[in-house]
Every structure is written in C-alpha cells, then in structure tokens.
Amino acid sequence: MKDKNQIRIINKKASYNYELIESFTAGICLKGTEIKSIKESNVSFNNGFCFFKKNEIFIKGLHISEYLYGNTNNHDPMRDKKLLLNKNEINKLKKNLEEKNMAIVPKKLFINNKGLAKIEISLAKGKKLVDKRESIKKKDIERKLKQNY
View 1 (cartoon, rainbow, N blue to C red):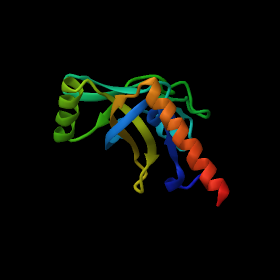
View 2 (view 1 turned 180 degrees about the horizontal axis):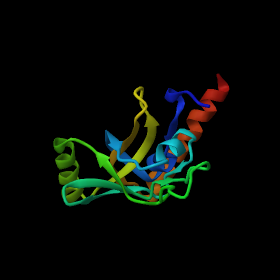
View 3 (view 1 turned 90 degrees about the vertical axis):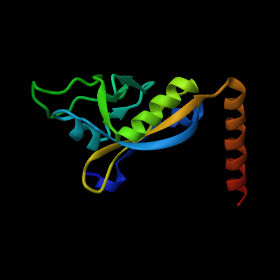
C-alpha cells in the first residue's frame, strides 16, 4: 500500500481550463468508507466545482468510488461534500466569486501527515480557446528543451 505522503490526486484539467489565481487548502467532511477509497486513489474530479450554500462551501462533482470491501452501508460516490475553511477564507472566496465572476475549482486532493484528507482549491478565471492553445505551445516547447538536454 502507498505511503501517506504519496497519495496525491491531481486535477490536470483545472490548469488547462482555468487560469488559477489563488489557492486555499481545505479539509473535507467525509462519511463512512470514503477515506479508505481515497487512500486507494479511487477519486475522480469529473468537472468538479465548489459552490456556496448559506455561509458554507461545498464541492460538487468529486467522485469518490465506493469502497470495494465495504458493506451495505457504503457511501454515495457523488454526494456533495462540505469543505472546512475558516470564516475569513470563506468570506474572501464568496466576495471574489460574486464580484469578479470567477469559479472555485479543486486542484489537488491529498492526505496530510496526520492522515487527514485535504483538498487544495483555487480561485480561477476561465480560459478562452486562444489561451488554451498558448499553454499547449508552451508545454511543447518546454518538452522539446528538456529532450535536448
């Protein structure tokens, strides 16, 4: 089995589809066997995004597969999960989301040193098609430079 520090699930589409502006690390409220599925890396960020309900922030579209060895009380893989941030961070995100027409996207899911599941979310602005093409060109150039050395 993997070491605690090696469990990192990265949302590769986030940096491709969005211009990431500011990052925050949040805890996740998990139920039942979800942590076991995360430790086995059975997670997918299918178009995941964050939204506000009252003064709390939730993540939608984070698919945590059912635990293979779970019983009939297994968790719902697509349920909305509450994120744990302090009040100042929530207010800052809410303000930017309303004023500047931005999105909050999940960037990375990991297990910290204490064995707790954490998610890194980013305040993001959507990229246009031209910006996506430029980022592909930059990656190709960097790849070619690395091959030459």
